[in-house]
Image 1: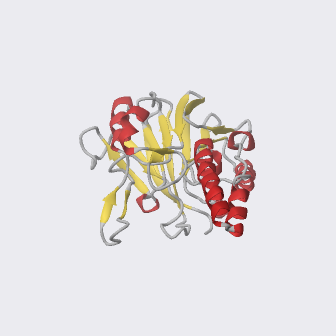
Image 2: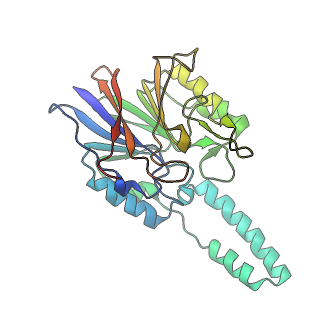
Image 3: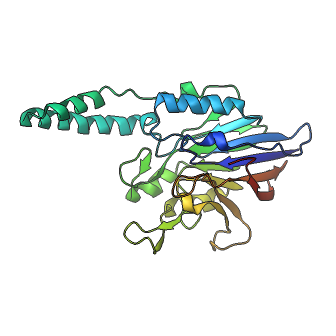
Length: 281
């Protein structure tokens, strides 16, 4: 028996281009699609519904999905804070007699939250939001959170990372939208495009070194697409925890045409990690 995981992330409504060629499988093998978040632009009900419809057409036995920072309307905390800002803006516009601004603020106050769990509800779709699931004995744990970056959804403040990641339990596969420090987190500096910076969470990495999953799947940082390993002491290790950044789009939001397929044996040990071409782009 083996587990075959097709890892993708950050499709931003462009998942239709993906076409997965079925692997060679024995009858007892389990084929799983993993999406590490940002399947929409803003997390509207319409965008999530289209994603849910696409998921149902995929041939995998199971699909495991988390949200990301772009699923704004799926994060009740983000939406509540946004509406507080819009209420303040409305009061300010009324004081200044800004009719157009007031109308826009009033409209923003009526934006509904998106019940992503209900929309994705399906016997073969496992939606994880700071929770785990088990598929044929393979333990998954998933979280939509990433390190604070501007005003996006599902954010962990920089000084609260250690406290937050303490809740991460032992699992075979961890799926978190934001990558750990040094692994798939390199991107251009906002102030200098020629300078590279590592923006992942060090507290997340520290916790992973304690729980020791076989596989970590993230996204969020589009230029970080690829595979690295961490042996607990070196971020340039040839073995150890397999860290996959599965971002499916480039930093200009164009499909690059690849996904990462990870195979684990019945003992939950990784036996193969390969980059696969999509059937079309």
